[in-house]
Length: 78
Image (cartoon, rainbow, N blue to C red; front, side, top):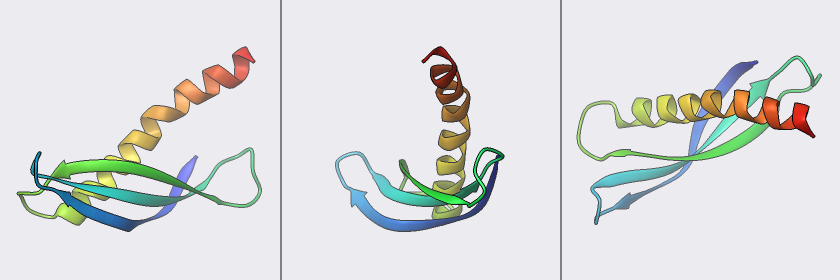
C-alpha cells in the first residue's frame, strides 16, 4: 500500500488546547484495488513549532499506517 499524495482540506485552531485540528485527504493505492482511492483522516498537532503543515501530513500518514493492520485483521475475522 502506497500513499500517492496528501493534502489538508480543512484546518481550525482549538484555542482551549493550543492545537490545530485538520482534515487530511490521502490518495492511496493498494494491491487489492486497480484505481487509487481517497481517504480522509482527522488529526491534530500543537500550534507552536516549525513546519506545522508537514507535521499534520506526517501525523495523518502515521495514523493511516497504524490503522491498516487492524482493518486487515477485522476483514479476515469476518
